Figure 1 (cartoon, rainbow, N blue to C red):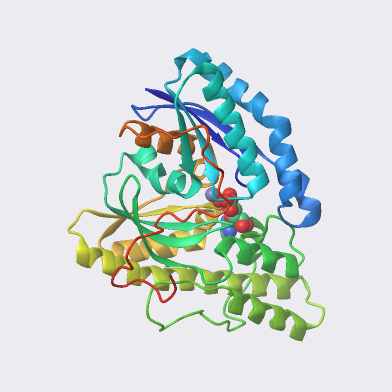
Figure 2 (tube, rainbow, N blue to C red):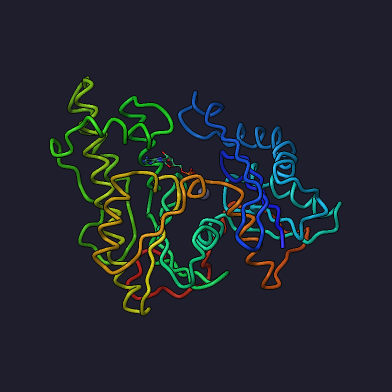
Length: 350
Ligand code: KG4
Ligand code: ZN
């Protein structure tokens, strides 16, 4: 079984072909970083237009790289949400058009389900497992129990983790995207010079918060007046440490709640662009080892937005007999667990 996947929900335009033996036959990703850099963040209208300019060529390129024709695919999967709606519409319409002309089934994929199931593509991981998704748009802990069966243990009550990295980088004049820039500056910084808050520390649940920390950084920079090179590296290091501490601290509760419900072997999967952060990875590795979990981190190219994860999520759904009508409406918001009961150990916010 071969599935074509299409991803256009944020600032990556991507197409991929994936087979049911977990082989990635083609995985083409075009990042729009250069288009958005002058604005210091993703501009939805620019993103949608860029997706439209490139998606046809990228789909053709995926088939060329795999040495396949349209006739070889069993179904077409496209991200239909959540995300920036202009971009989501471009990918969904492209997928539907290909499905319509070829007569192949169409599968509407939830972008978050793509991230959630990636570890099954890369590592063949069995259900259930715990997923920490930390990206520019999301910060959540999910119990992944099966295809379409997710329970959220916690999520951010304000900013996503990557968003906080990007905003702090902007305040420090470190450029866009912020995460890698903050990490680089941190290498030359002294994290112990400034004491920053650990949001929600000691509070029940597994939710995250970053806006208070971001504001603390803003005030710190104001106090410094005109921060010099070393000041900026020290602030970056203190911020990065606070984020890593906070994410690890909140995740620890989710690991314990998961362990109380499921016998081993237990796995913690990390996904999303922020999972590239080496300090965070180190902290999560220590935490996992301490709690008797294996830390599973898909290769970075499959942690950040890509279409192989969309093809794979589509494939998992399709082989269970699911497909969607061509009237499936793209969704800007689409939680993975809309009706799920809150689990013990879950956060304060629904
Ligand atoms: O998953 P992703 O590529 O895109 C989506 O948000 O969907 O994640 C991008 C985010 C950006 O906010 C970026 O600043 C952050 O991931 N990021 C990092 C690092 N590399 C990327 N954050 C911290 N440390 C990094 N090394
Ligand atoms: Zn994503």
